[in-house]
Length: 106
Image (cartoon, rainbow, N blue to C red; front, side, top):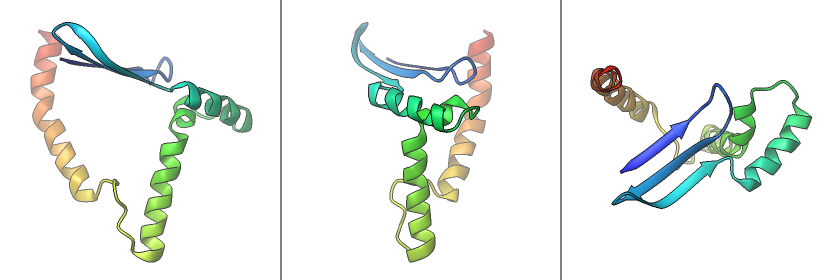
């Protein structure tokens, strides 16, 4: 089974856990120790900004660089979702919403 927990309202810690046969075999949390050090630097540099921006700063930089390179040079932005992918993702979310609502309320 896979368990994922995220809390973007009461903090900026998210984690994912994979269990096989009731035993945890993998866990990843965000921010990790390297991210935490970067968060402290960014909090000092940009006081008052939303905390989750800090832990995701390296990812935002990567996305912006890839998209800017595409705009400037036409290079395919590998790993960046297209509008078509976004639309399909929303379709999946819409399809799953009633089922998940039923499970959460039932």
